[in-house]
Length: 312
Ligand SMILES: [Zn+2]
Image 1 (cartoon, rainbow, N blue to C red):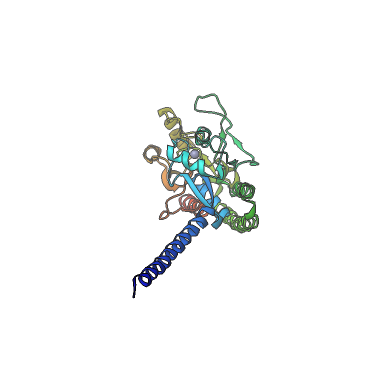
Image 2 (image 1 turned 90 degrees about the vertical axis):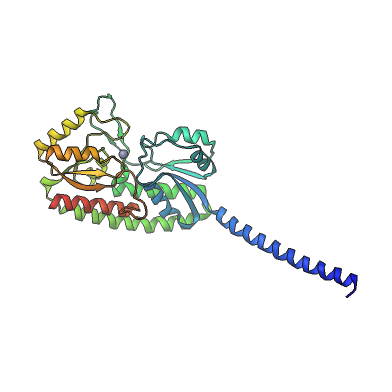
């Protein structure tokens, strides 16, 4: 082999090698491109994140800001949250004062993405009176605790995703229809299970007033020492009032909440003689290994806990 032959051979193999490199690079780029093609969306809390994932399916990449077992009422957003919101194409929030911190966060993020309030169209529950001395009548934000309301959330999510990603319209509609059918089955199950609890035992204590919509929809009275938010501290007077009410009305059980410190409820149970009924998921899902990793499993967990405590 003379010098020119060697040179040409080297050039050919270099060419082949660079082709392989270029091909691999373009392959990686296309995989990354497919990933980026997913519509980045924000859901403020875990329950809403699960609903958005069910409607968005494979077309969306959902980032949930407040995670499992965490309290959205008192969440403090981070600079990383602002960056995530800044990169999103749609931001889904509950509204009704649940995540009051979103207004500043959205402003700080500089996002131009639409903010969809998923409770739009829901018949809201105003607190009849404010017994915590603030002189306001706050709106109850925990609308998801009624399955009929969750169906309105799903419709709003579907419409928000279609507006942001019109090419996915048929996918979002099909996903929403399939999930709405599951919610219909869930609602029938909730009514059957709660319907078996004797009427005179349908009164329980929870730590904050998160189950008003559930109570109205399915016929259970929930009493709580804290109001519809966890922001205000509970006073000794609030606790004393609850204990007196448990004794007077013979309320059978008190329940823990996954987002609240259990110690206060343990004290109330001890002093009032009511039994501890278990743990309800109010404002957040459990993690993957827990009993409530999705909205549907959360509702099933809660009705099982209620039925077990109130029928025995
Ligand atoms: Zn709450």
